[in-house]
Length: 125
Image (cartoon, rainbow, N blue to C red; front, side):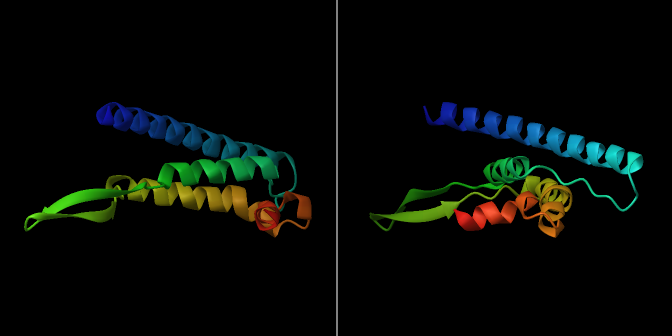
């Protein structure tokens, strides 16, 4: 049962990562298209709900679940806390975080319209 849970969680994480990469690249492409049609100084600001959803998805992908493991040390067992941080995805995750910050979160924060700022929603909740 533990192995099935591990495999299903791994598949879900991979699917969500692929989906987030696709959404991010689509959003960047949309911003570039709109910038070509409008003025050069215009920056596309994604809707607040989209920004919040993408950040939540990013947190889900980069999250590491902490666990406890029993260790037998000199005839008595103790619980050890550990958390797996997968370093093989670290570079990919850093690039994804920087893309989301640059193209999703920062345009809303730097916008003059308070309704486009995703941090307002986070501060209110």
